[in-house]
Image (cartoon, rainbow, N blue to C red):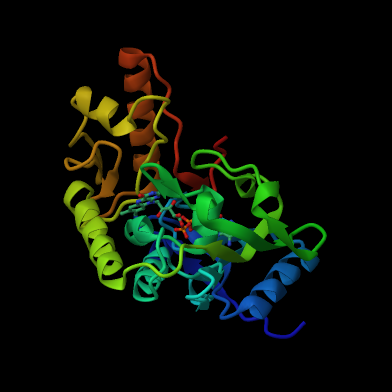
Length: 296
Ligand SMILES: Cc1cc2nc3c(=O)[nH]c(=O)nc-3n(C[C@H](O)[C@H](O)[C@H](O)COP(=O)(O)OP(=O)(O)OC[C@H]3O[C@@H](n4cnc5c(N)ncnc54)[C@H](O)[C@@H]3O)c2cc1C
């Protein structure tokens, strides 16, 4: 098998936005689809567990030694935009803010909300990332995937994927996203799109702690409620365990003040869940994905 390039014993905290995570036994950053597929095949034929990290912006990785291969897709980021049809073809590692700015410059409408989400296309489809009434499944046409058990690669149409609020089957199945086709509305007013995109980012920075390491919203919003509001009502903003703190700016964010570790963050998540359940009778389900934990 050609093009197998990986490093050994790499610290994953460098690859998560909250700056937490242990060592990966094997680690690789493929530059294109071919290298990506070969790495997945290598892990299959060598009986190694294979984990995928995009931008690591919705991930809590345990501070342990993670056996097997960890692949970070961020270097696999080709984006092709057709400004006439509105179709965008992006490799799994393409970043949403890059796509958002490119959409505006090409007069494509409907992706202005994605600018403040610092994730990759693969991660955002897996998480069904969204903002307000928007979510990425609304713009999705199809995904190209590889099955880690059979090693087949094929395309799945959006209608055949059961997307829900911050959920996709890719969180549980054996499929890894290689690339995606998205659809936006062509022939929009470029000046207006650039302005909306810029304002959306400004608004997010005003209301969320973009200046500190975090992994975005910790919990999914319960039906007809907001996790951040429930946490704030209990006076938990600013509550700390070690260097992990519930953001004083937004109740649904945990920030790493300097050297927080995964246990402190997990303990903080548990404390919030217990307090909200006791006082409000609501169980907050984590949105953040756990890696290297025995977590359901
Ligand atoms: C400051 C900040 C603001 C944020 N704002 C928002 C927001 O407004 N809305 C929102 O929805 N989220 C938000 N997030 C969370 C996060 O950015 C999104 O969930 C994003 O889509 C995650 O993408 P990622 O590439 O970082 O995925 P990662 O965190 O790297 O991974 C998340 C999950 O996706 C899986 N995955 C990654 N790539 C693939 C692939 N190619 N194939 C299959 N599975 C894959 C991983 O294994 C993991 O289970 C925010 C985060 C931060 C730090």
